[in-house]
Image (spheres, rainbow, N blue to C red):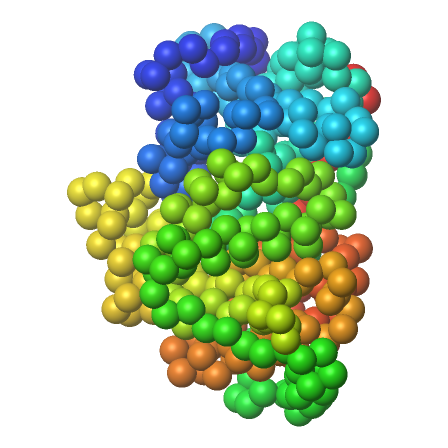
Length: 378
């Protein structure tokens, strides 16, 4: 196939760029589409605070007949490059038909774009920041995706290997089954560490207060502290934190948000989860209007699915490895039971992050997905 690459320069082209993923996966039972408006905001320099330290361009691949056969975004996150002392160009939101000439043209375009900006390596799939979906699915193609992750056809990683890209990092995803009762060892650890370190649970009850009192910003500052050592992470700016507080707080069920504070009432840990929106997003087909909002609201409020998403767990560095996670889930498990959930989706966890993996040792679990970040010198 002869492939022509064109940079996205108009609103109409950006619309086609976003919709290409929906068209490629419209009949796939496992893919979960992003909301179109969310994607517009993500790619808007005015609305996405990540553009304060990132630069990016989007590209579409066309065949001889003028049909779109692939897409990719090229990104330089200067903040992450500085933190990790590298010169990496990221590729994100990559999709393509099963033709090596298409994937080669997309990857070569990102490499050339990166070289023009002084980069020496390519890595991806990655977004602007860790708050975007990242990692290419390499196992679990017959499993339903989540709203926080990427779904892709099995031929994608095969193309990456043919193009000479190698593994940079892997994430695993788990099904964590909700127990009938809090595991005894879990409960014992929870009691011990709460007494030893003077820790207590704090529950939030007013969304408006979360947005205006500063506690929402405290949560994201804690995430900055906890996630700094993790692969590719760059600390969120205050404008980013403002953006995420306003974006996520309105859709949370505060019963599934648990904070842990120490004796000085300092925030030392947070666990945030919510009902899975995967099926609702499939029914919405990427649109809130005219009826997409109904499917999302139904999943959140009226007829919850049996699956929940663990959006994030963060523990302040000086409290990591002390069992604080047990305190979080001692509070959350009864909530999950009451709301009728059967299992939780962990969402991506770095396979080498032993602290995260060990927190599930007292639960029945099943590793059902794996995703990968690829890299190559350019």
